[in-house]
Length: 420
Image 1 (cartoon, rainbow, N blue to C red):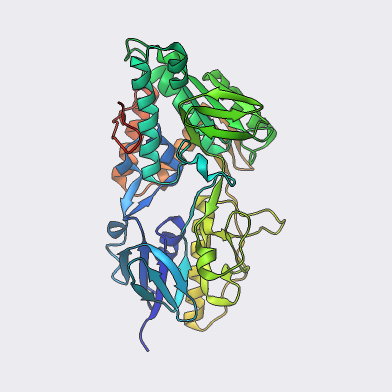
Image 2 (tube, one colour; image 1 turned 60 degrees about the horizontal axis):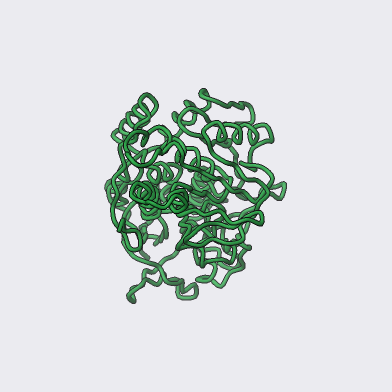
């Protein structure tokens, strides 16, 4: 009998952490992803808002795993799982056999049954999403510069962010600073300081994972930046011309979706039970019910804490799950008892608001303002991969902090977004 064959689908935080933790084990790992890069999603919004370049938050998977001779990396799109035959099915007819399968395919944005809104309100989960949003934001100012009609010009200078979680708050604050600081004085027919940034949240407060005090601070900090915060107003319509919420229609030519997510089709591949967001409902050890050889981790898995609350879809949770599954598999291969049920350790919540404010809740430490912003920055730089990227991001942030200027403001054309 040959080496134990492990297939990992998804090179995100969970998949890479599992692969790292299996180093030195008697296994042959095949990593499959439909993209050739690992993405540091927590900073994706900074690419969308011109603060960072794509290469500063993404790394080729082959490069990250180049020293692991036990790992084969495949670029491919998974279309299904043959659980009975223990095979992963690939687009184009290819198959990859496995003895143990780890699915870590992440999530995409969801529109609560209104997928027709997506062309008008792109979400933010991939580099392609980020460059699309960046293009639309910058083109809005370019179109406004030559627009003669005052109402159409104001619609172009109105940008709406839907969703008051960390991504929505971070996007709204950075867009406001981009308009009021970075672009100020660069146009002749418009004053970018008159840009209207609106953050719409269906709930009664921002950052619902934080305590009430931090939610209130985030709202006040955004309003100081000039952001209009609309709470308790679910969106009822999104079109190319604007957004309807709270019984009124707001003309706006740029809308960004940061309100909801849906898991990959892993539950459909497996014929497994799923929650409302499409996440696979897994056993306490993160395996799929009825399939002890298949594990699902990260945003693709529906996992409950002891108090019944869901494990959040954040990078630390995915990494913890990757390490847990690796410990289980190592124990199985060694013929010994493995660890008990997965237990999530919550390290805290962080969100930034512009370039000088943030909120941090580590339980034992709660901070707001610029001290929280600096700690937020240190934490994110620490988790970046490689000295070069840490240095590049640090210098970019320092430059923005001191000058207010953002250098990643190139407009790359795309379908439906031309400046003509």
